[in-house]
Amino acid sequence: TTVVTVTELGQGWPDCFAACDGSCEGLSTVLDAYFGATPQGLNATEELKKALCAAGTKEPFACFANSTNEEACSPMLQEGTVFGIPQDASQLETYCPEHDDADPPATCTSNSAIPTTVQTVAEFAQQWPDCFA
Image (cartoon, rainbow, N blue to C red):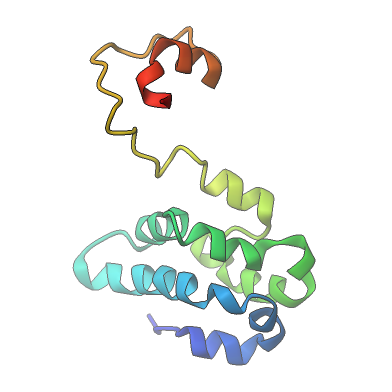
């Protein structure tokens, strides 16, 4: 496996990185997770997803997947299909659902099981108001 750096990607797709210049650190985190996983015996694809969907990384990465940057960034994202990288904003939302990386608030201390009949966040908030205080 060849390690790819943000600098190399930036040289390959300068227009994309010009449009998303604040996204380099987030992309670096994702690349580090992917290329650092295998030597540690971890699943690289799972580590990439964890890193990409983590708070502070998903938002910068979203710039690359934004439709306004499609012309400049889609060729780079297409290179990432082999790794399962989302190709657009809707795929990014599917890849990283909001609740995946969110821990419940510390004040949410109910030991009750979540009933399967709860259908909405509003119903959940009514059942466990301390979680939404």
